Length: 234
Ligand code: FPP
Image (tube, rainbow, N blue to C red; front, side, top):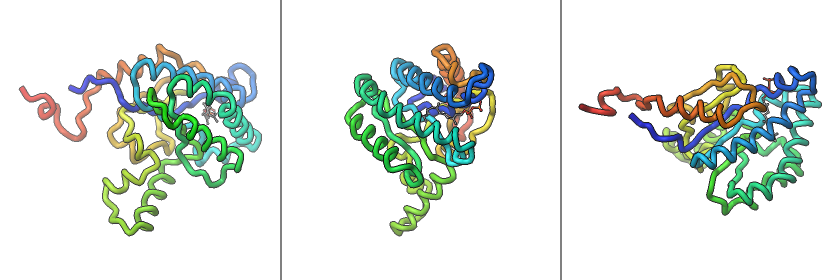
């Protein structure tokens, strides 16, 4: 049985709105605490030798939220970029933004590019922030790219045209906030990922919650379509 720790962990950071509502705060206050949780979890993952962390920060569908929440999330991203890049640098985090750049403002796009450039040489942990991302968008953009290049559409070619081709598929996908669905996150890449659903609201997610997910992963048998007997013959 494969008892290895996951190389690549992906997280749907859900529950910010409910966290805020429970405290009679505006939803954006939950997202702010969500940024703090993300900083904490990046550090925890690096300490646990996870090589890649991919998080869902803003989906293609999140544009449909109330206008003040959308603009609040954009401001939060701009602020986080301005404030956190130096710290990421210090901690050896390489950041990449995954998703559609079209539709984002010129100043946000510039911030994303600068953060990617500034951290490009870091090797301790790779952080992919999926922003303006959707799993269906990703498959469509990959297929379009192959067609434009005149390439045959095979599983390998499509995988290598996805926006996450640089880091491979996730081994473990965690969703916080108690819902049990993928919500258009890494649809193709999730084919053989282990799934872990935590009732914890994202701003509260801490070391114990992460370790519970990692312990559950360790106990899973990853068969990739084979039988148990084929994996460990007597
Ligand atoms: C889902 O919670 C969370 C989001 C849509 C945003 C996640 C963003 C962060 C954690 C901050 C990092 C990102 C930026 C922009 C710097 P929800 O609002 O759906 O919560 P609910 O289900 O309780 O309403």
